[in-house]
Length: 251
Image (tube, rainbow, N blue to C red; front, top):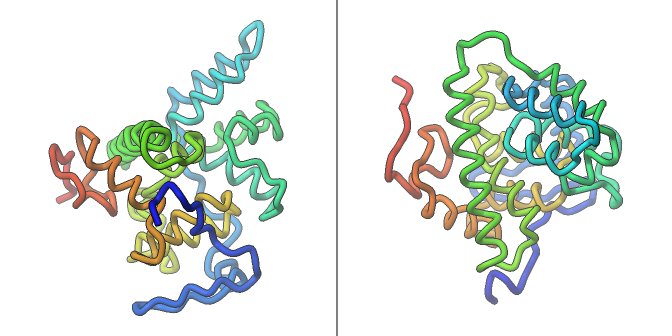
């Protein structure tokens, strides 16, 4: 069956998630919750993103589209807003999925407060954050284009999948040092997506990434986006797909 003909792959809504894999069996949501505490460290937001959000908020007429564009250019700001919605709705069927709808639901002020908590003052990992954010944004733009041209996905959903495709690398990049998030990028990303109650289409992609060959709808699009990208990022779990111009590699 062609990729565009199916939209499966979302994580089941039941309490127990049956991730049977040759390399590992992952248990249930309750075990995810015990492994990943509620108070994970904040994901950083770039100061320039906060500035643009603030300007859009304080304009004579609030530009929701401009505010959304600022959020969607920043991995951290996007995650923080999805986390806020996850806290409010959990895995409810009426949970907003698009960032535009999330912002409209919780309000611009709540988004600003969350983003301000995420702004970094220290500079130790700033270069790595810039590299990851830039790579993720480029992949997101290619996914948005490919979704409409080739794969038949919702372009807004495809953009979010591309933007967050390598969040499994966050613990290493940000130095979280948590044993429950170390070592396996795909498993770390899936755990975070489930714990933060991300939309089903995002959990579906991370499920695919953890179970290679199980489904291929989103992963095929991500691979094509990497093939179209001008550069890759050394820590990206999929960087072997495209090594045209690798960025700085950690020594």
